[in-house]
Image (cartoon, rainbow, N blue to C red):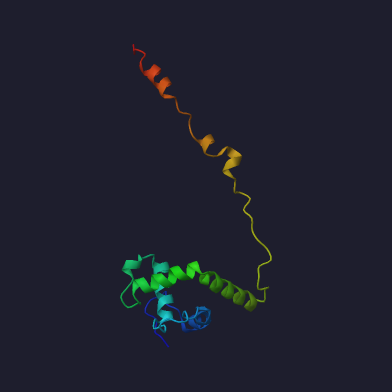
Length: 140
């Protein structure tokens, strides 16, 4: 059991849900020595507090290690798989179908092409020749 140091740290129950969803270490390399719960806690800390990676407290794994996991999991869809698995579990616990069957479409969204896009919102410019003739007239 790991004690919580920060409000963003995972509880034991949350860790039990997430641990099986973390990808295994890549085969052929050195064995993983990084505490994956500490990595998740560090990522949660950054996301919850909004601090920069460079300001990650020193009691977490090195910021480069944490960021590498964060980045790689975004690239290989680990985050998406975790989210989907947890969503299915929550929906099943609520007695709902695991996959949503409805979607919301925002009817207030208007495409810019319907209004004319950028051209409709910009004022017309005078040509350099028109500017020269209007500035050469004497002012009274």
